[in-house]
Length: 502
Ligand SMILES: Cc1cc2nc3c(=O)[nH]c(=O)nc-3n(C[C@H](O)[C@H](O)[C@H](O)COP(=O)(O)OP(=O)(O)OC[C@H]3O[C@@H](n4cnc5c(N)ncnc54)[C@H](O)[C@@H]3O)c2cc1C
Ligand code: SF4
Ligand code: SF4
View 1: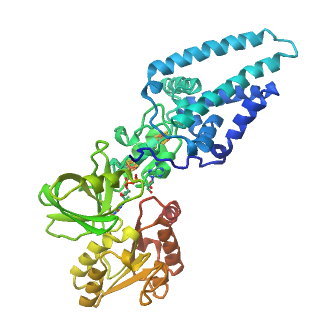
View 2 (view 1 turned 120 degrees about the vertical axis):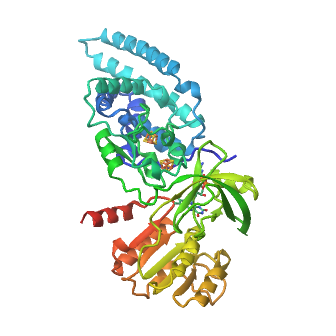
């Protein structure tokens, strides 16, 4: 059985990467030098103060124990589901009261030494021992269940929640309360990745408020979901900015998104790990879509979770659609799709969605696809050549590893034979035949002057990054480059933003 939860990097900043050194220093060093424990007073003050303004931000970004759990233990943790009772109100409140009772008792005992030389040592020892106890108990829980299991009922987390609620009550944190925000719910793929990577196993994608914010008080604002969302639509904003984003987001390509019931008409095994699914629409019967868009296919488990697939067909009657799915190693969704989805079955889809790879009004087009990222160019090639006059040149650079990996190879060759405007440029990184050009997609575009082309790229993020860099070198403006990837590519998003604001 494939694990629902995914292990991803959570240590994005220096504090998160190395904060655990402080934990070790205080918890273990405190056994020899108890005064080290006094540093914990600043930790408690810091987390209470930051929580007043910005919820559990401390837990996700500064907490030295959090750093230890995420950086050292997460990679070897079982990463299992956090037991429900450890998250329950009874556990959280009960443990808080138990901890506070013991903690204050020990502080009072240390206070007996007030005014003597041993007071700093005795007080420091209380904090250092507490730190050591969290290291041992939290560490064991992290190893055996989930890296952040302790944090579900950590008394310091509860203290933060109390402080945050006070900030809310006094309306003191309206501007500083940067909650997880979704740019537009319409753009969400419902893939659940935000939930699958969340250290706290929260479910943002099913719980965004009317102002597009995730109001769960337990969100530690760690940004792991922001980093991993394939749609790149998550960020942290205060409510005022979230509402502004909601108002100003461009929904081009997403306005026609709707629920679709379809029948699987055909399942064709294109390669050992690649299947083509042909759907006919039941409701609505006709679905206008554009090549270059994608559609969401509903999984059977968990409820209301989907996977995005590029539309690999061009059917202007809007009665059917084709997608091509590659089975992913340890893939939670493709495991189900490959095992359970058979011809004749009814499935639920949502879409069509996306605007990036939709054909722009222009006479010269360059398509670039590698791996399974070649699929949108099947429909796009058909659509662009069906336009007739007004199209001067269309090139498709198709990169794969070997000749056997070329999907729809004969289809593209035939297009080239039938239409002189179409140029098919396959390239293999490890060809078996001498006549196949060897190299990567960049090698096939080097020789052309592409300044007047609209360029559409789909495939691995590395290929997209390298290709965009080459295109920019070749003086193709960023405004003529469009791409889609399974993950957001921050470097290119940044270049796009800079060009747009210039
Ligand atoms: C706009 C768009 C269009 C797309 N079009 C297509 C398309 O046409 N065809 C296609 O095949 N795909 C396409 N995809 C990708 C598709 O949506 C799915 O992401 C893909 O099918 C894998 O889904 P999965 O649930 O099987 O994989 P997941 O379970 O989501 O796994 C994703 C990755 O995480 C890794 N992983 C999973 N679990 C763990 C774990 N416990 N520990 C460590 N690593 C783990 C997997 O090895 C894999 O590399 C598209 C994606 C987008 C965003
Ligand atoms: S919802 Fe996102 S930001 Fe909040 S804790 Fe989970 S991964 Fe971190
Ligand atoms: S697209 Fe982003 S916000 Fe939507 S479910 Fe997937 S990861 Fe979550």
